Structures are given as structure tokens and as C-alpha cells.
Image (cartoon, rainbow, N blue to C red; front, side, top):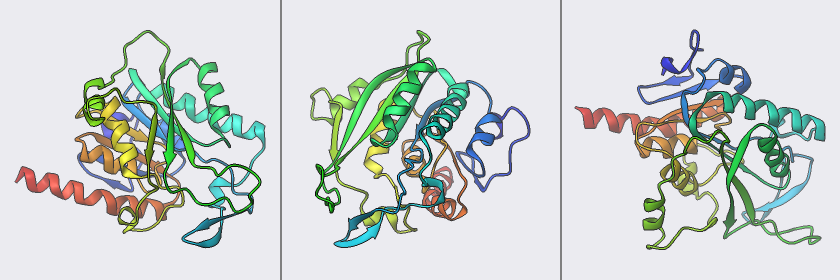
Length: 268
């Protein structure tokens, strides 16, 4: 994986032939990567919604606070943070590469505006509809049951990759629409530990199937428990994940190891 860095590669938390995890500042590690070296970036950045509120989980009232990384910041700080990582991702994307970003009302409108300002073209605005969302305890608005996933490419005239045929096959022979319905992350995907905003595997598998090819390099700058990495390796892609939380990378490593062991056994 050293070939993706411009200078000396940072020390990896975990590294194999097809995957690498890096513990540290996402901005610094992204800045050290080679320009135009990545085929697809999936980012699930902080939503900055940890303000001491509560939600319902498993029938119990729990805090919505995710951790220090998700603490509320000002509007100006949100804009600065998102603009910085988006431009770092733009730098490492190949001219034909694409950027996928997951978010909620807390950050997705800011991100959409920044993408257009920084020279991206938004391809799709995908609505992920959660079939089993937490109930609305406050009863002061409609129950939040969706997240938005923006799919964008650099607006440079270079064609991006889209496996239209496979998406149609996966949708029983019909064109796949931009509303994807499914459940929240099941317990079986959290056997190595829990991440507070872990995405379900089917969501990342569809993204990677749709917009990348075997052998492509996938990067997740806020990798958390690395659902992106699990999907990438299971689909024959390479993966780089970055996070500043060691506990989350321990979960990531344990989730990725079985895929590497499988590839070694196949080679033998």
C-alpha cells in the first residue's frame, strides 16, 4: 500500500497486501497520499449533533452523544471542516473517480453546497430509508427515518464508472431508483464491537458494486469500524481506512482479518 503515498508512508495500524488502516489525523494522512491515486472515496463525516439529547434504542432511552469527535460546533466551523476534507479527497481522486458522502440534515446541505463550490458535479442524491428507525420521543416533528448519500464526481468532463447493468440485475431487471430501503445495522455485523454510527453492510456493498471495479482502491477517511473496508475486500477491491480512534480501528482490524486470511488460503 506504500505506493499510494507521495513521501514516506505513515506507520500503519494494520496492513496487508490489499488493506491498510491508519491511526491519526485524517487531514494529515490524506495530504500525504499521491494525487489522483484513488478510485472511490466513501465518507461518513461527523454530523456534529452530540448536544446532550436522547433517543430510543432497544426500548431504552439513551444519549445521542457519540463522542468528542461529534461535539457540536458553530456553522462556520462546520463549513471549514467539511471544505478541508472534501478538497483533500478531491486531490487524491483519479479524474474518473467518485466521492460518496453520507449525512443527515445536520450537515448534508452544507456539504452539498461545498461540493458545487469546489468543482464537483452531483450525480445522485440518494435517500437511504431506514425500515426500523428509532421512535421519535419528543413528538414535536416527523420521525427521522432517512439519511442522504450524495454521489459526486469532479466536474472535469472525464467519464465516471457506473455499473448500470449490475444495478438493474440486483433490482429484479428494473432500473434502480435513488431511494434505497433497508434495515439498520444488524447485531451480527457488530460481533467485534459497536460503533455508534455504523452503516449496514448492504449499503456499502451496493455503493462499491455500482461505482468501482475489481482491483480499484477505495478510501474511507472516517472509517470507524470499517464497513467500507469489509465491503471493499469482499468485492475484490483494495482499501485504506483512516480514523483517530484506536478502539474503532481495533474493531476494524478484527473485521478485516478474516478476508485477508481467506485470500491467503485461496492462494495456497
